[in-house]
Length: 179
View (cartoon, rainbow, N blue to C red):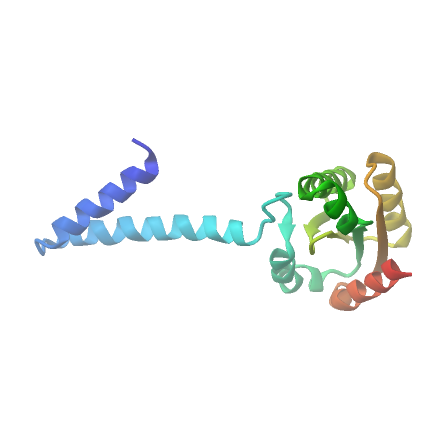
């Protein structure tokens, strides 16, 4: 029997025994239900912070990490990538082809990142890289390397500065992207 089913059956049995008002079974029932709740909460949290198409962290995950990690960094760099012409590709070749390009883009970004960088799917066709201790030259090198690895055409913008300014850095990178 699957573990999940086992715990559900265990919880149901405990609930039945709890009806007999026996304290041991009541405690056992509560413990089993608490275990299931904690286990499911971890799964739900992971699902809420992961993009289902690319398996990258999503914008929700990024927003949580802003205060937990990024604002505390002395130096941080951000790069925003935007897949060129995705709407036209979806309209002419279909959404499956568009999804394939999104996955390919995600794979190329993961491939160019080192241990100090994290990749997020920031929006429909936008990706965000956050790199600790990164300056402009390192960010340019990452963009160049990504272009060499992947045939997916993408525009990019980047900015670097103090971690406490990360929201402003993203705004600046977005302005750089649109130039």
